[in-house]
Image (cartoon, rainbow, N blue to C red):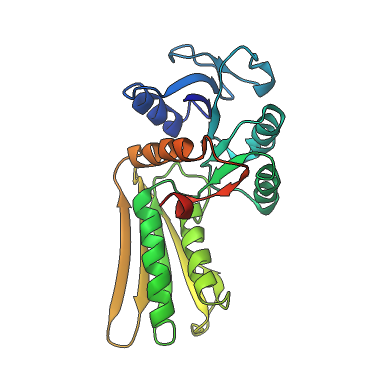
Length: 250
């Protein structure tokens, strides 16, 4: 499998490069980033239009910035290449663009490439369905001080999946500093913490009368996201056009 790695100079890009170097049959044949880096074992381009057609590419993995989604989607559509999109912070227009792309090529989209996080989401949905009448739901996410978007894409994904399981009846409340009133039953509180080099911690609290249940996931290395992205790439490489997710792969 030959990969075009978008965002190759970033932290996740470096992690994927390192992991691919130890895997047989998986190669990064070129990278794309806003800055040049001649220390990588593959050519790096600063403009996706400059990638020559002579470079073999089977699939695109994007761990870059959400502002680049337009060019990535155009490249995949024009060259008929599958896409694993793992960048968080995508707005509605960006998500709509990927939905449109999925009509012509396979697209794997996930706010979090960890298999453990996605199992956690399934458990939270089951808990919400069982506990919703008597328990309040709060989500706390913690990440390193370099993370730009807040709350995390994973926290929003957890909230969205819980909300779907409750017939989309819940309202999201971000922090609580602007509201001086009692909590409503139909709220999901979402709170962000930024500090140090925390890779990623997500806690979903179900708070009831005289008891609380907390479902947690902690990431201690970015390797789990890189491994998940590569598994996703292998999963969709030969799939027909469509939108795929961790639910499909698990």
